[in-house]
Length: 129
Image: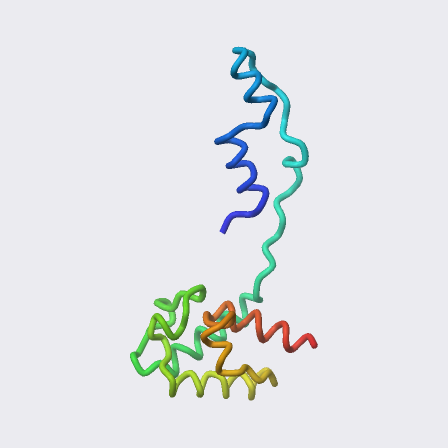
């Protein structure tokens, strides 16, 4: 996923700034740099990689389909992609509660916490409270 600064640069590259458009229309080159885009890209705040790894490993262990660890995409719905079903999802939620002390309501699996990364973010947020 690209950073906000990269997306803004991309848009400016496609559409240019107002001064670039005016310069292009008059045939002049613009050497004006976009303001504020020379700053370092913003760091993506996401779930800790170790937590995502542990959850992926657990999903691979409890999956009735025998999904391999490397085949699990942590950004997609674990139910929609068949990584877990209703029975194994209950086992996953029990593991989370036992290991991290966080009760994840089953409704979260079809809501914001429907992916491994979403679950990790939920765990991190709830554990901090």
